[in-house]
Image (tube, rainbow, N blue to C red; front, side, top):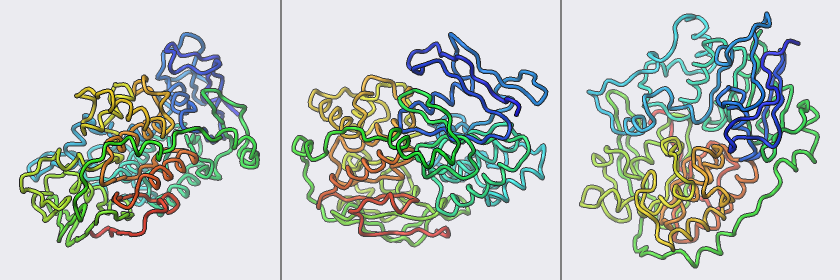
Length: 483
């Protein structure tokens, strides 16, 4: 089999992205790969190395065509990662603002404007495979994170790359979309001249189309192993995902500053309607989240879950056109957005992507005290100790002085989760909080949520995975796609 990509004795110049040993790796025709490892094992750095993103002080990364001629990596490889979702917009910040602050007079791009029509038949085939033909005439800012992920995969496939790298492709997809993606991977694996590389933190997500597995542990490449042998090697799997230490949440509860919690309902929404132009996102929705309630908010991609949460969190200006009461105070009666946010701990896929800032991870966690993106106020000594303790609880205290941009997406998610808890919020709003986490960290975070959510804490929890719902959840609201 011909070699398509080869990494030989590669050592990046930047020390923080170096592996324990020089990297050697090949992708050959007919091979489909899973890059597997726990959060922080080096998967993201390995893919960036393969993509030629790092200047090397030793070694080479070479790609070749079918005739053996050298080609730029970008000519034969396309990659879709969680952090790439908003690359289709001018900036991350403009996307986040336009997501909720759009009006009829704005000239925003539609999905159709962002695809190449060189091979319209192939494009239509891909759209039909994914079942997203109806997205083509929507504004890009109106798509959910799951819809954006599907579109980016289609956009990458239009150019018919030799190698398609999908980093955590299943996160953000509802159950039917995950089935569709698995079926699509089978179809793609049967196409001539296309090799699939999946980057995954969980063994159960590896599809049967994969032929080879590259395990990573602590920035070290372990020996390549066929998929069949890997799934049977429980000793190797346990080694890759062994337990990591973390402080127990109950040890911190006594140190948290207790604020007044004198309210009856965290949120009361009556006859909610949200429209953008002719498109109705939510209609006739009424919902009460009482003090101490634990809710799961469920629904397919595009059902309006993130829009509903944006009304509660104060990010969406249409909140003022609706009947919404938060912590027993009606919206629009004099409270500021900061009065709302100081009692809410919130994380979402949109927030994660908006928060790609070059600041220390400890500063990211500390910004949770002030509800800012980036640390614009300095934590006092007590706040810094609390921030560090929450980082230890989530197993990321060793990252406190490392830039948020230089840690993996899974580690970023754990840092942002620590940020949620530092101010001891009355209401937790967790929109797909386990995105990109390995099995151990998923269980760790679920246990933290369960320990934190005592009788006085309210919880709204969004997920597409039934087994990710914390045991404390006892109520459900399901949104349908018709709003």
